[in-house]
Length: 301
Ligand code: ADP
Image (cartoon, rainbow, N blue to C red):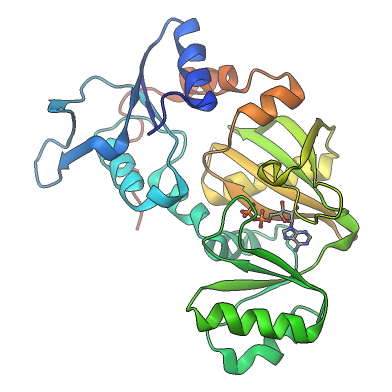
């Protein structure tokens, strides 16, 4: 097959590993900086042009779109979809997963376990909002935050109110969430490929830190999921329309609850913690699913 990895960072571990895994299976793999792609969207024959040359004959792409480049990145993925090139993660699914609120709404619609979560635009309704999620302590999140930045734990009602007012004063979009104390600063990263969890790890936040992000000093170890956790992870990826996804769960008193579903999950942490050849599994998935023409007109309303 002819495979393109859409990434702005050819030297990143995840990009390199996907190239290696594809080449090992005898495929022709190239890294395409999607920010350098341009397109003629009015043409009868949709094309993506890269550094002056139209990209032709591709069987599959693997989008690795950076969080701050979602708008242009998904436009490029959409153009490939119009050309009938297979993508495990469609453009629409990537856009939806990038918006935490939209993501939670889609998961809630499918009856997936979530922390009690509230959202409001006006600061006039703060008291009602805080009461909706059961009062303090609670977690306040910037909708556009990643890597734990913009996730704040407020212990008291007054602190919660001040933080909400401050964020809204800056016009930031936030959501307010029940604090899952019993998770003990740990979360579970479930790596889904197709309709299976192929690797899972537990990330434990640094001492005194409620956020488990590895970027914030968290430590990871391999973990065996319960059947309920496994099915929550695969159902979440399915609800979002993602076939390569990192689903983050917390272990709560009311069962597994989903934090978020990531459409470009990193490979380094999970491969190191679990020893699973995650990149190889992604390539295998493409081999089984990327029949040419299969995805033409997959854009939905
Ligand atoms: P980001 O996308 O920035 O990583 P998350 O929503 O995943 O933000 O939150 C970062 C981390 O903070 C989570 O992995 C989890 O460890 C912790 N966390 C987030 N929300 C809650 C919550 N409601 N209760 C307990 N811990 C939480």
